[in-house]
Length: 419
Image (cartoon, rainbow, N blue to C red):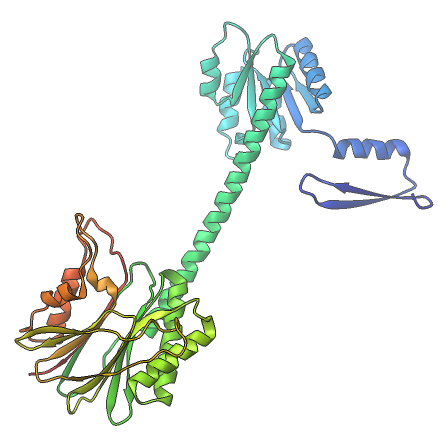
């Protein structure tokens, strides 16, 4: 108290500090305000028997509850639309509208704050407890009322109601989070669609086929092609860890780093080294991606291959079969100062190479494991007449049955030298 002013601080149930300042306040008025703010939950007692109402009010007031009394269900329903009590004690048998009918109307209210008010029905020995529960009562107490039993059941219903409200709030927050996630995924999908090349380059004497199938709206696979020095082309593919928006962001970064690398270097090994060093510098080994690239001279058919923790490059020799060139380095961004060794490759007319991600291995079926690179190579028809035909056959092998979900993103690029 400072002069004629009173500064009073109140902490509510949520821990919020509320400051109230009074000037020339009377002690009685202040005491009344404090009593109201610190009062317990309000219980609405609805019973046509005045003696019973008074007895219940004394029981609950002694336990710290604020009690409001009404002698008929109609007035009670009107009241709860003005102010919702913490709980409702409702007599089952009353003249006019009985407790069961009042409860049915309460539960049918479109306002959840009203429809979900905890209700404990007061019944006599001979009255139907099942009817009370079917009408929507949370609990019932048989007359004559035991004070301890009544308090225990009220406390239980208040706790359950609080938990139900909290769960509803959490569900609402979860639904809002889901909607935000869907918006983020949609934005990421549009971004990724813009990153995935839609039309391959036109190289005289060569055919190029490509596809991308994310397991959800967005995935962690990406591929591309870039012109490099001496009229060569760099074909590359990468697979970031995980799925969803985070993996899509990694694919965005992958495309940026491959573009940056090809501007500074002309050898595929040096380009991969630059991408590795940039990823390592950004994430310090916490995020990484596998990758495979081929630098092709379209005029001669000579190529150089470099892989980093990626499934082997498949090289299909026309009329003879398919061989594999394994990756020699760990995934990009995982190890500092990796060595990226180039493997020479010559492609004759009818030959093709396939860059792909591990989603092409398909799903495990009926207890059988996923396909291996060797098995995938055995599925390829060496007499395939086009790059599109080669790609279609591999995709068919990787496509799960109609009842199954694809286990991983699928991306593939087939580059074939025309006959």
